Structures are given as structure tokens and as C-alpha cells.
Length: 138
Image (tube, rainbow, N blue to C red):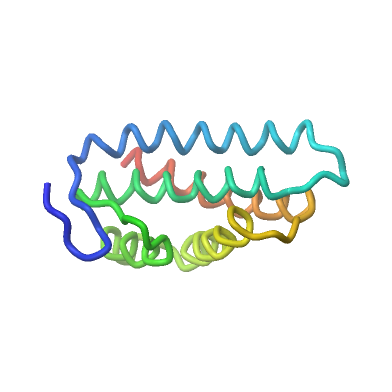
């Protein structure tokens, strides 16, 4: 498979593996929030949420277009738009952008986020995940 720009060509079966990973990241985020106390730092759960959104995006782009985004996660939205066209609802594009916008801050930053921040981001992820699951079953 060849690489073009910020994407990498993959076999469409790659999508099934990424879908499994996405589901595992969602479960990990939910479990993290389930055991977290109200004053705990939300960054670990938010990191799982970001990883889940990336994996769902990869599952869709691999299945529909035979490519996945690489390294530049901000470009993942455009890769998804290219793969799905008008099938990507504006609301889900917004959910994905907002989740990906948190990546650097929660994974590499020094400012702790609250559990409530993670819960709000999880709600966005769950909306995106529900939509993505429906799209992967088409």
C-alpha cells in the first residue's frame, strides 16, 4: 500500500480491526469514569475518548475509501469527509472536531481537566460512536 499526503492506503479489512479497537477505547473511557471520584483528573478518560474517535474514524475511512489518516489527526475530519461525502452529518463532523481538538491538551498538556469535562466529551463520543456504528453496518 502506498502513502499519499497525510493518509495511508490500507486494505478495507483494516476497518474491522479499528472498529474493535474503537469499542475497546469507549469501554475503557466508561470504566475510567465509573470508578473516578468527582475530583479526579479527567485527562486519562478523555485520552481514551480521543483514541476511540480516531479509531472509529479509521474504521470508516478504511472500509469506505481504503485509507486512514496518519499523524495529523486534525486532518482526520477531512479524510472522513472525503470518504463519506454528504453521508457525514454536520453534527457528527462537529462532534469529531471537538473531540480531536482536545487531543494535545489532554494527552500532552500539564493542565488537569475535571471529571465533568470527561463526561461531557464522552457524551459527544457516544453520539459519534452510535452514528459510526450505523455507518459501518451499511
